[in-house]
Image 1: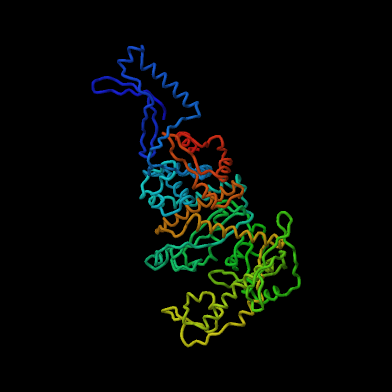
Image 2 (image 1 turned 90 degrees about the vertical axis):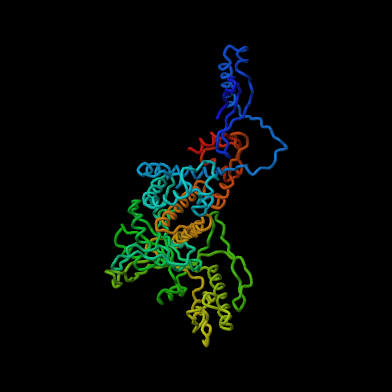
Length: 614
């Protein structure tokens, strides 16, 4: 707002002139005025000036011009002013998220959708608030609504019930939004889909029941309930929903799907990959996945019998202990192994801490050793049995490169973990009354004859418990060995290992969703609201990954978020705000968005709003 000439009319008819500065008060959310100069009554001024109104309006015009040109404001401080709870600090860190949000075209997308819907709330405001808050201040939908005024802009064009109503609308846009993000980023961010990573995780709900399936009159399942008890990663008893995530080689999520918590993740890859390839027009990709996805059907779906060039490829982890005897014999046979020293990007030898053990297998410390990549590989005509016509009966042969490598570090870890389980198993054998099915955990696998009372979970009485010595000896043979298999027959062993290790990025991504983004526990409960919740989480994940890429991966996701949380604007005087909380991360983001000449320590409300308008 600006300086203006105010004419105040009194009851006796006299008009008093004063020069007033108008400004916006964010506390009361109203326009306010502050008198700069009291001039006098108009009838008295007419004795001194031919046209007092015109004279002082011209003066005000000059004052506004000087105010615009001046970069210095004098502030009076009252040292007796008491502390107040009305000091308001508004988050400004979300400006970088908003720039990306708009760059991706999400604002225009929802504005166009709004035109075709008969709703009286702002879809774009709600969706952007849910996405920004999922990154900055994650919480329930109600918590997000209650804290909406933490941002500099006003999110006031909707009520809490409108957020829940909008979730029913957002769920229909999943496929369109995934395609929108892909088209907006595939060239600008050099996305690489020659290799894709796939993995699954689950998210729990704090309820004690499963969702029912929707069935027709004949008992056929029309729609499956999402929230089902299944193998939860943290062994919680709550119902869960499974999420399968497909990520490209640049660590940016491509697409996702959710499915009931009691369904096997082995079946989830094929439908999502097929749909994503068609939607994004991806010609060929090599899918990298953990050994849980290494099934005959998944192998055949991706690579077939390696007779056509238009087939995809795979890189899977391979269980050694669970493999065929022929494979295990090949692994243990030391013929053909190669020891390649490992160097870092600067050409220096990579060292690692090796655990030392005493004669009884107990850890007694660490020693530093040079890292070597001990490995061998072969091309093997693998015979698999695939499902056809609902039956697993068709045998096919496909060429597969199989690579096994040995890691002393991995061997030490396996030995250490097993020794812990063995010690627990020995204590269970000595004191079975101390334990139940839950507290036995993995140790029960090393105990002969162990059984549990179904109703209580206690260890049954009268059992002849003993240690599985043969199992322990068999496991020890394979400590440190890990295998990877692939359809890419010409890929080198080192390249194969490096590409497989990229799978750690998708595991890191899941960790981000569960920690920084606090995707779980999920507080919504209808099918549509659950799907919409994961949609906003997915968009938030893509945005924060892109922000990480913009800063050349120099900062962790947590540091990016914490820095944006602390960057704020606080009302200093009238409509002048003081910006604070900037650190090296914020300065880098300012540089990336070319805002060096725009963001200053002191700014007017109008200038900040102008920047936020993109």
